[in-house]
Length: 318
Image 1 (tube, rainbow, N blue to C red):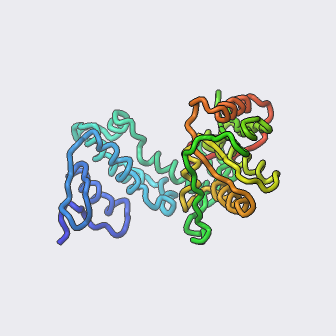
Image 2: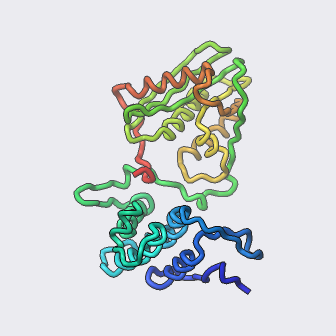
């Protein structure tokens, strides 16, 4: 028999009548942590963590399926329903009296009103999924200016590959390529430097669009390294070093929604048929010559007058 602490069974999502039971359930038991469905739930009451529950469970649930009903936000009834459902969690977060206004609760908690948050989520859906331009006030956002994500479910399982890496330190032998990205004063640059038996033989720098992220700069560094590798003949071994653990983890993960990560995976897979390419993670600013040199070049790249690579904006950062 279903234990009451597992909450109400909700099958169809509707703002007006199906979201309220879930909100009431979470509010009743505060923070719930369970082991598995066959065991008795265990829970601890820490009111300070309730904000995390709101952002991690309640708000995403209330905005579920926004792509289908987001255009109805112009209806006053919908806006009222959203803010009404948001009110109870806000009372819990603020430990406030029920008589306080919803607007005051939103200000005190520092949480964006749900109808406004819905506009952001729905707008992002239109830009990246439907590929529609949107307008907020007098500003127009064009969908082609924003990067679109791949649907991992549309990629054949055989194409889901993992590029492994290790944490071995440089040996100073053979070809060693170091990459880095930098952002200074809202200007972004990427660089690579190539060593052959500890002697620098090549370097390249690129300045990116100002709204590019450091992550995108690090990805660009890997791409630049692969472009260099494609220009040289078969080699005994090529070691590629980066201090970006996030990029290496993205390459190591089988599934991806980022086009540039998938392209890098495919490039490495293709090049590995003729060349031995190994990726390594190294810590930043620890005195490793190649890493320090790449870092210096990347910082200089941010001051270059010409932008050589334009990036589409990341909708998650806007």
